[in-house]
Image 1 (cartoon, rainbow over the protein chains, first blue to last red):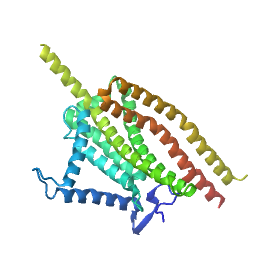
Image 2: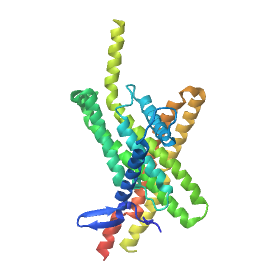
Image 3: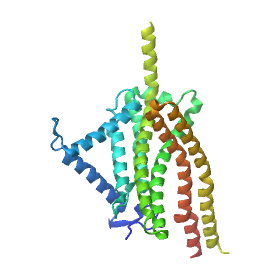
Image 4: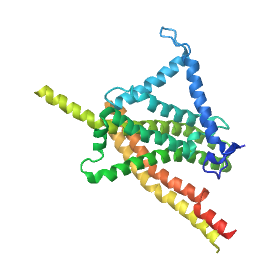
Length: 241
Length: 91
């Protein structure tokens, strides 16, 4: 039995339980499930951490994941990844886990609903000015919108909005399209070919999580980069003088 | 032909045209990008990591065009706004 029918474009339309104005749909339920898996798993593993030679295998797993995330972010920002790991790492882990769990029968990826991806993209949309202002100050951040002249202000604003929209639709489109393709293939060639497409779907899910995290890091870094250039120039001039 | 079946026919033809024509450009662009990235990696294998990351970001940008076409065709087929209007008007 499939939870989301083939002609339903979003799991938001499947309502499991409703009381008054509160409705519980499939998206919220599975988002809570993914959150519970991430939080509960991390809590179980980090209960007894050790720093000597005997390290449990689950601690190894988390250390590998965190060090890969830190390395990827550290290559993109010159000043160390510590500020950005909480946001970018959480986005990556949530999207990756919810995409990979699709192979469990009965699981509906919360990222196949446009509301979830819009919420994640809104987080990035808010985080970009937050990091920009907290690093460079409000005046410097606002001044970036009027570069090179004030005529470019509406284009900067349009760019901010359209890239948030692109972030939303890209993740939603990829995951939702894959579910639909597998549903159609199950009707056409039932036995072996959908399995191969499922394996491809795992690859697509991980790549989309990676792309979402990398793109949000690129957007945040673009709000910071100008100040870094200025400081490097000042340092160069100082060393020459 | 009444209005409802005309809307259905136009939606299906429009969806297939959007998907078919809309995936030509991203296909050409992604092929070009991957070819250039492969030759760049062949010339400079040391820069492999940053080249791959830039390639993925660029592919995501190109791919989103095809994804827009796909979402439009999905909306035309499964969540067509005009369809509901005509069904309501026709009773």
